[in-house]
Image 1 (spheres, chains in turn cyan, brown):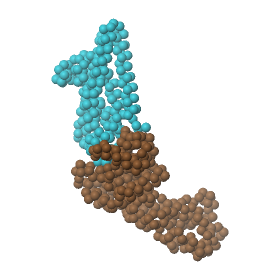
Image 2 (tube, helix red, strand yellow; image 1 turned 45 degrees about the vertical axis):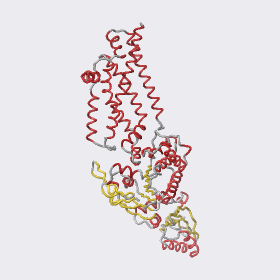
Image 3 (cartoon, chains in turn brown, purple; image 1 turned 90 degrees about the vertical axis):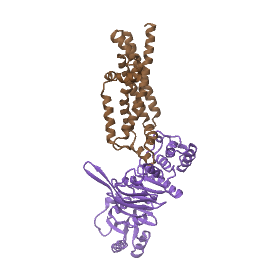
Image 4 (spheres, chains in turn purple, blue; image 1 turned 30 degrees about the horizontal axis):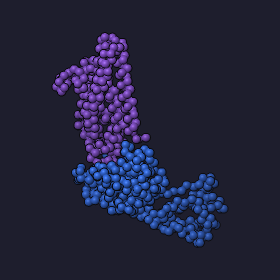
Length: 218
Length: 343
């Protein structure tokens, strides 16, 4: 493999990591409050409101139903409006974040559902406000499970970002697509795969480690 | 301190409503320990949860420290709830927080300065005897230790009232009694009013001043613990007392027990004392009056607020005539007397 090729792979890896973590971050910025909202307005929870819950739930489901590859295209006008372009890493961040958010919201909702109801009850009995219950009880108690969800989400985003590569998002996906699918360079394609596998393994291992570290249930 | 007036609560299920509380009224005086006893499903959990409005009553008043809680705004209610500590059957400690941090939680919610939190938590750790466990997580504690942490947490904000929801039901007997004596100690030391619910008569007997019996959502009996034990008026109450104090015929005796007398054997008699008389002297009385010997086989007697009650199994030995007279004497003294057979 030539030196420029190696540098290209290094840059591609950097771009993939950047897209994965940045869109993961923005996805959480949108998904976390949405997930908390979905949980809090559920039946039997402290801010029970079936209308708002159903509305949020429908919205989340709609976004989750759109295949990612179509979401990228569908969102082009919106992406242009926000970042000024529809190609490259910056442009990929918008659909990646929007695509990850509803997924993250559902993950967060599920993590919060695992928190024993008695803890919420105890906090209410102490006179905690809903905001305090979220900050002091729900999020810290659900943290190990949220970290696990974050690892799953980031791994899904590695895959999504590679998909984005096929339509000009850059990163390892684009290299793999161009040199592998289009040019049929066997070596490059496999190196790309190995790099993706390594990224996924590192994320999963780190996630498992952090989840275990924060879990004091056993 | 706590007054419930005609509190009712119905849960709506698919197949109609379930009445959990039906016109329940009672008053708990300041500094008292008030126990509510009932079988599972009797509505006692709903009752205690209505006192701090974890459950909103369908109708009626819940007056705590002069304020009717259902009338309060949510911020006023939060303030009132901080005057009430609560402990639970399953402790409900946060697994993500150490013992110290769990106890500090109510103070954090109150935005207490960190230095004050530290002083207060140290005090409480000493009170419940867990100074050495301050940095442990709840998962490393035994059930009794967890409940001690929960008690410390409930007391952190210096409440006037402590609500105990089946606080000892998940604990073994030895731990139960140590938790109960801690509660009694707290009540004496700080004058905290305690409202507890339980299904165990032993808990009521051990620490309560007053007791209320709840069955099918209705309050069927209430009064001072000694009075209820000595003179239960409803069958449900009697059942609770009986079930907490019973004796079984020992296996060896059961093998040789015959239904009727052959003239040379002695009756095995079960005496149930409900506290109306001085149980301690009936045996010497019958010995003196009828020349019989009372051989005690098994007994389960107890003492609450000056009242002795329980059950004793005896063999009454003597001539057939004297034995008969002794049994009649027990009956005439208001002791529930039952001849189980002859040995």
